[in-house]
Length: 202
Length: 331
Image 1 (tube, rainbow over the protein chains, first blue to last red):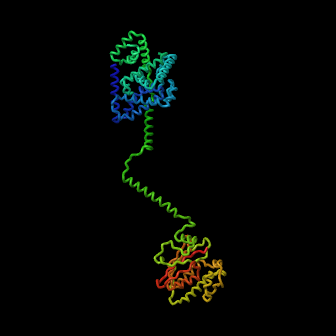
Image 2: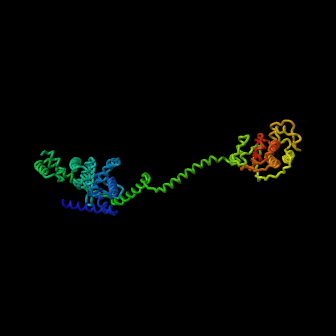
Image 3: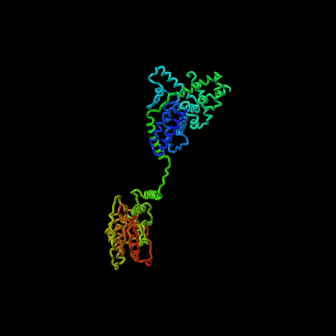
């Protein structure tokens, strides 16, 4: 736990330094931020939206918004908190759009899209697995994906932030704007719901 | 504590965020309740399953694509701003004034253009100076035509006469002749002699064709036999209208007669006015000693066809009489 805190603190300090560099004219600083946070952000967007391409678009949109506002960032919160806040709002807006509703039935884990991206199923597999094991893994993945996708937006948010991204309750409060009691209750309900849907698997 | 209330705290217990008293209560219950213990286990399995999910990484070209999108957005935003966002540019007052003046000048220039166009008439009926007056005279045939050209001081008080002339065939062009200097006439010439001389000169020049004597019905009545020039065909009795029209002299004849008469009466030709289009003499301005005005008019009646009788004047009022004689086609 102490190790995690120390890592988090150092990571936060590093972000501060990079952001200050950007604010004083270092344009390369933004690229450093992107390279540092893109994977975690992408992962969050993926589990939030349930689609690889949509996750890519949402992550790109998030960084574009960050770039536009980075000069005015006042360090009232950690940079990562601010980054996730933008990402969650971006994903929520996408969930409301009709495009997402049409694509929800087209979730594929073996065809991430046209861009040169990582196939999530390839990530979870390795050469040593047997085909049967590979298939089982893919099926579990799909079940979890569908289970999360079926949750209400607010429950999905807290599950993705807490159980998938591993953020603390305080960070979730800062990112979502929910009070602590709301975060706890929504998370509890989300976990119970997922247990019901994944009962045969777990 | 009841199982229901314990289960509500299991999620927080899994995350280890319960305060110590609540934590102790839960642990105490779990030690004695197998159902809640199983509940906790299943819940913990879900959380473990989620936390162990393989991370989905961003595409390898994520940064490159991000740059492309940012550049295209900048261009799009610029274009949209240019098109829809009003410019807030401070324009120097001098530049704004100069632009306003230029626009005003342009507007005035355009306003004048239609006026010119309205004034531009087709060539065939284009009233260019004198030609315009001639065309108007032909169309409306006023008894006494008013001059459209601003008259000189002398001409302002001029007597205006109009002589009918034979209509000329189309395409007849006249070369404008210079204004003739009046030939000084000896004062000792008698009025009667002058009249005879004129008649003889007129008859020699005019020589009307047989049957086309340049006299009107009225003239025939006025003409006395002894004054009739030789060779000048005379008709006895009244003349018909058709015959009268046929007897109208041509422009050339009329002009020559008038010039000669002016000289004989001691006057002078001041100017000749020509139609710009055809070059045809349109009018002649002359100066006649007032005392010879009546004689001049009498002779003029014999030589040409006046549209209306000339006005009488009082010789005492003026020394010289200015007359403007217009030549009007009889068609």
